[in-house]
Image 1 (cartoon, rainbow, N blue to C red):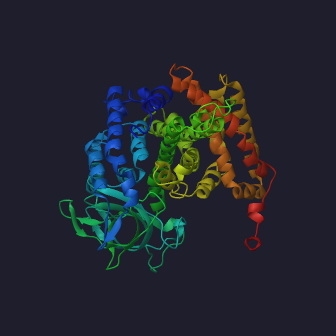
Image 2 (tube, rainbow, N blue to C red):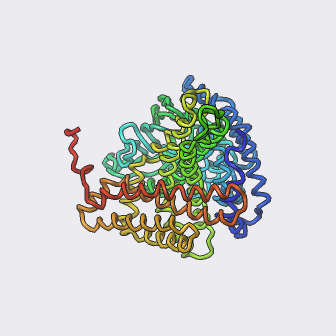
Image 3 (cartoon, rainbow, N blue to C red):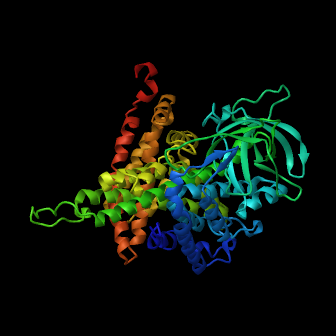
Length: 592
């Protein structure tokens, strides 16, 4: 399927809705123009089709395998990543000082969406590597950047993040991996690490010269005990191969692959259980100060969460496009009123099929638009002219990150479910791509923080901590944008939803009210996410009204659909909170 993200739609989002052209006039992104950016987008679509999509199904059938302690992946994965780097995409988001192209995050996100839609598993190696290198360029010392980040930016090495452990999972304060001081060298404070890490995507493979692990661990105190909780966590660079005097991969580090996880989907990305320090301790170097590991790692984790949302939206969108094509070509049934004498019609002529396609379109295009909008906020955070504008972008990005991860993950998957339904029995077979797309996307509501964890982040760390101050600023922005909107009834529907959300959140003024809200954090996240998406669709419809192309009518129609069919769900999610229903808190485990 050539050009899996419709280029006309992508151009509309970038240039007409998010005004990418204005970004290119800023000094930080100087040297780029629309023609050059369009050429890179064209190249990305071509390479995604020829070097990523070509082995998508093969990598699902022929999973990574462990042979003599080394994980082997398809040779096509290595070729794809090499081609990706040769085209400059591995370096696209980095500053020229680090060998990068200095492209805006908005453009890099649009480029990445093509590769994720084509082959999420292979693209994930590149996404993790970019996040690893970005953390190092931000927090690492000069020697660490030169030794460990630059080879990743060049595309020769890959990177991971090693957080979870078999006994800890998402509860990172309970990790037990130890980092014992071992002197200092030109790369910084050196340590020997021992412990186990679980669910490490890209944890081992043969598609790169070296793998740079960023590992969370605890430094023991003078009593040899580890500090309890997250305050004791530091972060360390632990490469698969130790660098020699010239910075090239040298001796194998003390890291062993204890096993591979065999997944429902997303199979082309190796996922490992790693043992550190089986024979004396894996050599690593601390990044940043002691005890700051979690704060440093969140620089990569937050980017990864937005990246997960982008991937989920891309997978959902591809499934939607396949379902749309199938509905236009598959004939079954007769047109209403035609009787038995009429000929069969394409199933898209049936209203229920169009309803499902509208739902999938609203979910997937909305998810991609949300990811692009967050990338635009990242650019504002880095390059806006005033400190106030940069601070506002930072605050809004923090507020929206749980939504940008969760909403596309949940609703991209829902779109894949719809795609199977539209295909009927064929969609349930491996002969049609929608079956694998569903399996690939099912991971996204789970990894990088489950939906429930993101809900607690939104409610506990964001909305309740500042008593909704940032949310109020954001809602005020929405109100300004939709005032006088051509879709006035739909704008009013969104305004009522925001008022309902404020009413629900107002219950947090007592401890009992906070307990109710946190016990219903996930429905609150669903409601907030739908408000965000309602705003995005109204904003897209406003921009589409200036277009004469037919796809613009689709944007307007989808905005009307979302406000009519999806926004009313917010009331149902919020009503138990407003009523003070605390059953999720009070329910005893023995009652189940």
